[in-house]
Length: 174
Image (cartoon, rainbow, N blue to C red; front, side, top):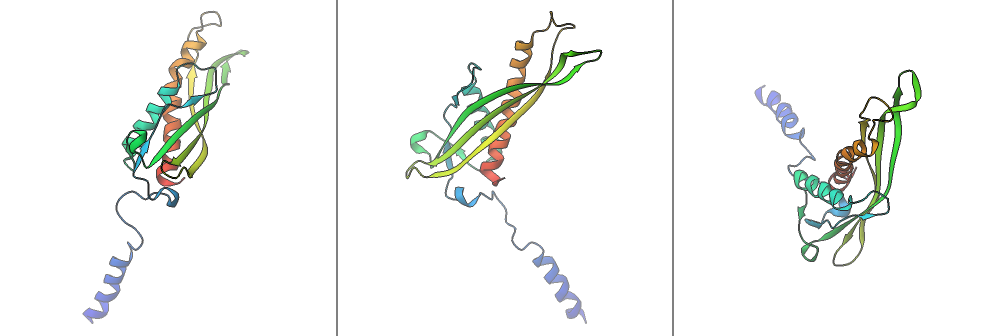
């Protein structure tokens, strides 16, 4: 009687974790990669001095994720190459009573990236990624507003969101 009760309970207890394991689960195309190098991004936009900011954001996210170790290019299993293609600022919210004035903007950074095997040169991953942030226009009217400064403060937030998108693709596959 006890054995008949114990056997299904043991099967349920030990069978419920089938297929799971502890530790990072890399995508199959990145299975052999343990170290990665992240040089500065290439910049095709008119946004100045953003290349290193984007690379640092990706490095920080990779370190927080812990799936890959960051090393120099000559020591890496794979090399990450990012390419900032587009920066778009779109109106998100207008001023009440005056639809021609914008109070809030949506800033979008669009980039493509490629991960290549350092030894063979084979492309392991190639995708596009987006990073977005919203920002409000300071000042009470159109004359006092400093749109450039407000946008400049939103760029690091968009870069961080872009890096999160990239690292989730690299470490989890989606």
